[in-house]
Image 1: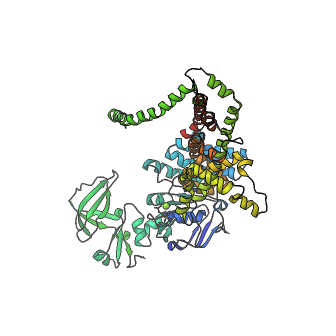
Image 2 (image 1 turned 90 degrees about the vertical axis):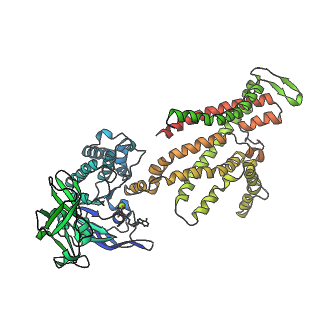
Image 3 (image 1 turned 135 degrees about the vertical axis):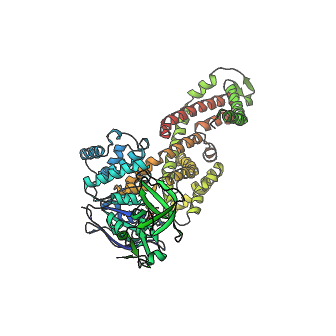
Length: 334
Length: 288
Ligand SMILES: Nc1ncnc2c1ncn2[C@@H]1O[C@H](COP(=O)(O)OP(=O)(O)OP(=O)(O)O)[C@@H](O)[C@H]1O
Ligand SMILES: [Mg+2]
């Protein structure tokens, strides 16, 4: 069980309100990702849930029971830190055993759980090493191992993959997703990488300056961003947002078109511009197109082999049903 | 210093310093060695340049030798226990955010700047004095009989004085170690359900072990040669005669330079044995 409810939870550091009162429910077994730009309060929110930080106001409930005043250990949550926070003087085995030892669990049960966790995380050969003798990915797995042996109500991850290189990050991402499927335990995962958010989450919580901008499944956020911030944040490369004449034609203050929803046509396109930088990924090519009446270049996704060069003129037409419209406040118009 | 060239120029640069240090050390050591094999008592105008190992034999077989070694070890051990125990506690305390942290830290370091002789005199006259020491007033205030620390518990008194002087050193080194502990590790332990006491025992203390090692090493080397505090307070009486003090007595009080020099050489050898042992035991700690 691991249903976490935040009710008007607020956090101030001195006079600075980092998290204005905020409501959120994390359902049992859900994989929830907090995503947002740096400094928006993701870690703070996670630490409030963990109990490492006291709330200024509001209430936190775990499985319906009030947890606001419980110390971290009593909340039944496990956390994986960005720096792993392994105990350097203990072997991997001792690191993983530590929470169980603190709970006074009997030795046989401890050994059983360590063996199980090590097996699941491919750590069996490393149990007697110190954390200092492990690679980054292995350390990360030890940190996860230390979390799973407690069989917590929910896992909290604070940017666990940000210290790993790109290839390893993809691998660990899959491993964590798989772990979630297998354990079926609630997970809350903090990241500022929207690709991680899109690929792993059941539910994404987009934060900006402590506010929740939108909550929804990855595809909901992709297809129907509630405002321009979410529209610009979710999706890679970024959605093209434009105001002015182009927007007026659609009765909106701003319109947004994703790079993949712009078609390159031979002539008579809606937008005519010059090709700037192009990024060839093999499967796709991303063009940055400079359009005279627009300040920022537009990003366009085209197929792998397009015979366009720097400086060429390009005609673009958006797919009519894929245009997102926003009003003066930046809110979505249906 | 990676290339051959920079290595050799580095050697040339440090050569003068090494030379001066060698002369500084070697000349007195050689003279002591020379005198230790001589029967040299200036007041009786005896000088016999070679009497073999007689001085060594009589120094080692005298009853005061063994007791002085024991006293030295007791004193060093006592001071180490107090300074490290107290140092760890003070370091943890000073690491807490509090009002006037900067001033408090400077005050804690204070005793280190007081010269040994001065601090011993202050303790002797201001605190330990039976007639008008602060402790006597305190005892009287609670209706107890004033206690004559320096004659009733002389060894302990000296341990207290020296520990007071060295506490800041230990605190300072341990404080930097405490501060280098990542807060995420403590938080992780907190989430793992460790009580404050087990956090101290399982996380903080192991983290401090390296700093404690350094403190033990450095302090032991300095503490083996405590002198001023004994000289000022008890003059080596009442079982406070350490090896260093015994050597001093042989040379200056008995005016037997030969015997004293032999004692000095023995002290050097013993100190080195202790140092090697310490390096062995604690050096392991420094490796990983
Ligand atoms: N202990 C603190 N005292 C004062 N301000 C703090 C404290 N911790 C965090 N803040 C502030 O709260 C805000 C949110 O910080 P937080 O660490 O939650 O950001 P984040 O979303 O996790 O960012 P990042 O992606 O860079 O980790 C920041 O503006 C930060 O300066
Ligand atoms: Mg953060």
